[in-house]
Length: 212
Image 1: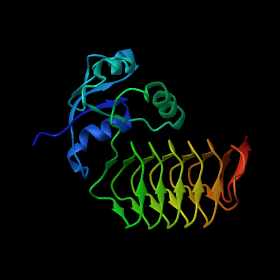
Image 2: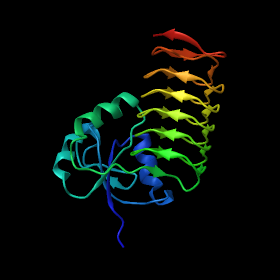
Image 3: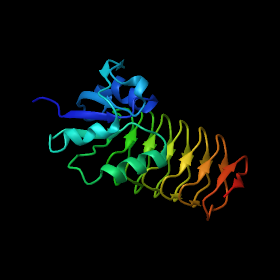
Image 4: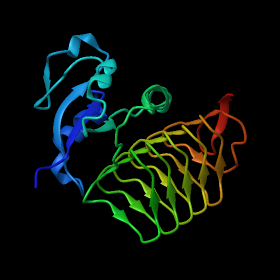
């Protein structure tokens, strides 16, 4: 049976990861093209895949049975695009690497992208459109809000709760039981030892707020 067709929104680093590693996901697709608002990429071939035009062209594929994935790491951009196009008739599949370890009793929302080397322990919830880069370790009973993005090597202690659209920098981590507010940014290598109750950017060990 032929693979389902897929359009990738975004021809940057995440989109290229999807294109190059399509057949290393648990479910693979026939990728028909990228859509990207960078006009310098239009009509180019990137990672062996044509760039068909701007994201607005997505409307032309409505009711076509083609699936769509947001190959974008930036939470606000993902959310803005989803809010704009969510009423169109598209499936947003999650792309999960065959090399990710996912425990029983883990829930994964739509549109998530999970890279190789990830470990996700039991009773954890992964929201919609979460991007989780290589070698992240997620403890038991965590909850990760929709549109959040993880750089490589993030480690969350058990019972960590992340709000919507949180950005976790490379190698950042939390103690057990930490809560982080919506749209917060955690700097690379930061260690979060206390709850972040309002939207903040934090850096350092222990992590301290620099903006709110």
